[in-house]
Length: 455
Image 1 (cartoon, helix red, strand yellow):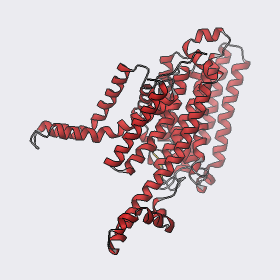
Image 2 (spheres, rainbow, N blue to C red):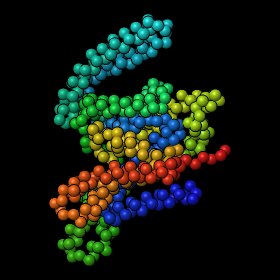
Image 3 (spheres, rainbow, N blue to C red):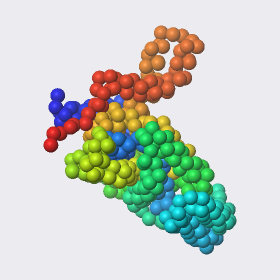
Image 4 (cartoon, one colour):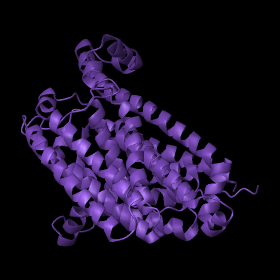
């Protein structure tokens, strides 16, 4: 079967699965899964750029997704005037001290002769600089967190529409990726994986403990939305009339009293579906743009160079290619895409919860999407994002159903039956392992493996 035909068939199966969920459960559930599938696909594309294009083993996906998530807070939340008034002077002094420490340390490294004096100079600069920074920073943090901690206790944001946070999240993730890449990209693959995993845990620890930044574990809720609110739609005459026209057949069969009750329920259901469709349109536009740029980049001379470096770094370096620089480029680009997806996810949730960032969800699962879909193939990563998320969400209800059917012949008070039903939710791990095992056995390159074109 040709690759194009396999692609159409695979996405056709995804469409059928979403339709089955819509008819069997509800269209609200189906559209909710679809939106998360799109976000997961964008995140998988970012990982595929790093691994599929360049062979970089980034196990810190969770950290970059969290950076995108906190960007939604920093962009959309209104600034807390009292916090700024109480601390802006000390924060400015702390920022100046920190930047000066970095600049003087770099200057010492470049100007001093290698040896004991250079080491001593850099050490003293860092110690004194950090001491001055903390002398200004700690009182500023205390004053910020003391301002109505139950409601605010942080600086707030820029008060801009949250959709701008998608771009801002990508920029923040790219900036942190540059800092990480300058230090860690010289490491061997396994050490790079350990380094990125550790750095992602550091990022999450900072977001959990620095309340002045985004309230820490107290969370930021009620973030603004780029789409209408359901309650506003339910009171809008144009929306009510549109629902009345759409469901006119069902309403015509009922009397006046029943019509009002039915119309009210129809409007409530339709408002939720309408909002999810609005999110789908926005997310799909981002996915289409990222996918288009990814395909163009991979098929360009730059993309061929990246794959040549991935396949044989020594040969590429011998031909004059700056391997480290190219690795840094793709590491930054892939991390920026992950940051965009993280900001999209926080926008959809309407809240930022640092404790929700777990390696299983935001690293392992994304890697499974890339591997199952087909690393090195952009469409494969998108397919993996859709398929794995559907399996991850639907494995629990399917597992419960299988346990109920499989233990139906046992007495309702049977200990084994009760144990299996109580732990049916863990079937999702079994299903994930089964999918990964089957794909690796029968299609080691993924469902849609990378297509190698002869130039």
